[in-house]
Image 1 (cartoon, rainbow, N blue to C red):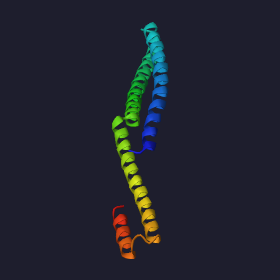
Image 2 (image 1 turned 180 degrees about the vertical axis):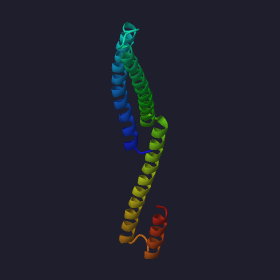
Image 3 (image 1 turned 135 degrees about the vertical axis):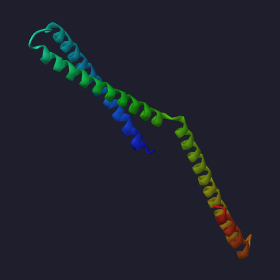
Amino acid sequence: MSKKVVNIIFVIGIIGIIFMGIWTISLTKSLDTATGMKRASKGMSSNQIWNDKFDSAKKQRNIAISGLIVSVILFGSGTYLKYSKSEDKNGDLISEINKVNDSTQINASDKLVDLKKMFDNGLITQEEYDSKRKEILDKI
């Protein structure tokens, strides 16, 4: 999974926790008010209004709590993916492989330079130079 996607999941989780948390708190206060008014208006004509408000606040609070749970799951998943040690191990392994490849190319480059100097100084023949050059290049 790309880092961009992981960061998006992580951020959506954080934003969701903040907004769903605030919404849950405000709906809990509304639910408490509706509960109190429902009890106070028992037997009165306005009782049905407070019953409806109570039911509506209860449904909205349940939706907000569900959203809060989903946000926490997203945040947790994003955190795990972002800071997972297995991802770091893979990254370390890849960087080690790249280091080996880079050192092989540097060694090959140094060998080719040395080989060319030997040829230019007349220490080896054209055939030896070509053969050894091909051997070095084949190893890369």
